[in-house]
Amino acid sequence: MKAIVYERYGSPDVLQLQEVEKPSPKNNEVLIKIHAATVTSGDCRVRSLNVPAGFRFIMRLVFGISKPRQPILGSELAGVIESVGKDVSKFKVGDAVFAFSDAALGCYAEYKCMAEDGAIVPKPSSLTFEEAAALSFGGTTALDFLRRGKLKRGESVLINGASGSVGTANVQLAKHFGAVVTGVCSGANMELVRSLGASHVIDYTQEDFTKNGETYDVIVDTVGTAPFSRCKASLKKGGRLLMVLAGLPDMLQAPWVLMTSNRKVIAGPVTVRVEDLHFLAGLAEVGKFKPVIDRRYPFEQIAEAHRYVDTGRKKGNVVITL
Ligand SMILES: NC(=O)c1ccc[n+]([C@@H]2O[C@H](COP(=O)([O-])OP(=O)(O)OC[C@H]3O[C@@H](n4cnc5c(N)ncnc54)[C@H](OP(=O)(O)O)[C@@H]3O)[C@@H](O)[C@H]2O)c1
Image (cartoon, rainbow, N blue to C red):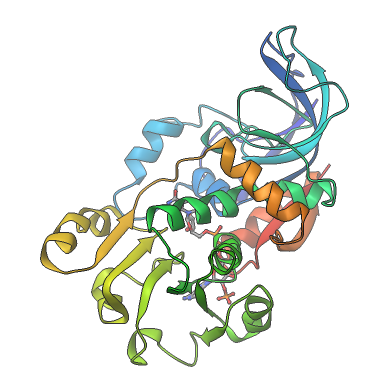
């Protein structure tokens, strides 16, 4: 089968189209023929090791010290079950599914095997394969952080970086949970963020949300430009700062913030639950959650897609079609 392989960390040029052995499913696995995948900000970080302060060595420990242990990137896919192992009971040949392989990666390929108990869920029938492929990364990240931040109905939430993959999911989910949402993005994306459910939108090139006197119950920072030191005055008493993107020094501050202020900092890696994929699929099926797609690239042009995602300016998600 064809796969996009990288054998060393670096620029998008390290991504090469190669012929590799087609996998065959173990007894508890399904073989998925991939119709669509995505290029996430996470893929770009694993490829380049361009990570927040203090995380480079941890990334090497997880993904390979001197070179990538898993040579095929990609954490999201949508496709059709092509064959199943003899013990598989949840899926059958021909089922349309979407899946999230998270740090196990391996989705930049024509086929992928996954355990039937992994993060694989029937594709919502109202979504295309491209849309379904883009459900998981931003959606599960937003859900996990909002849950850890204990967002309540009627609370006010500000989302810094509201037009990215995590941001567009956050705006929609926070609105769904009954919060009053303010999104922060550049002028070009204000209409998009408003259309996803934000009641207020701030153009960060024109206004600094930390200096306008407004306060929020929850601030979600998906960009890394709103550490506690900068936005503490924008958090209400009892407020929570959800640092989706944080360096180690900011994360280590969290216990100190809790002890010395009546506010809370929540950071760290996301826990992926299969129930969350079912939840997102259910919302998407009835039109209450929409994976925003910015650009689509053919499989052979993944390096180009990486160059675009590396800019840090994509709107929602970038999809790869096979
Ligand atoms: N903690 C975890 O486990 C976890 C999980 C997933 C992701 N992450 C991290 O979360 C971050 C966000 O991921 P993502 O996939 O959503 O990124 P993304 O899609 O690449 O985000 C791009 C968006 O960021 C916006 N942006 C750029 N600079 C901005 C600024 N100064 N202020 C406000 N918005 C700005 C851009 O909007 P404009 O073009 O309008 O500027 C663009 O729409 C990544 O760094 C990723 O590594 C962490």
